[in-house]
Image (cartoon, rainbow, N blue to C red):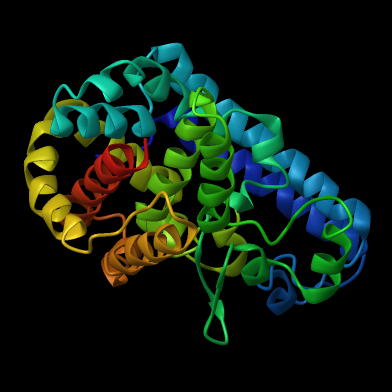
Length: 305
């Protein structure tokens, strides 16, 4: 059974068709295009207009997919994970007072235009080659294009850096629960295997790679809706392990260490099974990834507020 709905599949196919047209036009209409060049996606494109068109197409497609979820009126993955984190922590007075606000705001970065730009790259943190870690842009765009992008946006941002950025905002003003929720969002992004593997939506097919991001997170959503308590039970042991590190995440140095621990554990869930469309194999990954997300969220809320 397909994980994505027919409507969601159609949106993805339309996005790829539009992006392929952008590539064809930028290379030159009427030219004999080598198939191998197509398989490099945007690596060989240097026209500054092109990446603006790509970014616009990315955001439009993402917004269409979001609209489907919003129409159904269901909580997002981030909100469901956060609800389970609060459940795991119980009724601590300082957390109960901000619970509803945190749950509301933790999905904010997926909706705000400033955090969607250019193409949601600031929600990722994973390998980019040469033993470097960053967002996914260097995997899909050449150096010339990246140089052009630098003039329009912070293309070095990652889920790792954005978690720190918004947590710093919260620490400067403890009434700023929005920033707390946003920091939590990026920590949760770091626990998602597609984010830790730098697999974005919509681009992989252009490189003959598996397009699994949306389907994987859709399956995660279905599992959270129907069996969240199972993941929360497993999260208890992970929370105990995290606590054993005795990190005071209110200090900058320890928060860096905490984020590095989160990434290391998250990347442990990145394996060949992630690149399949096999639900049973994905369920095995989710049985580790979702408890990690819940435990990380709980530790951050317990120690960081």
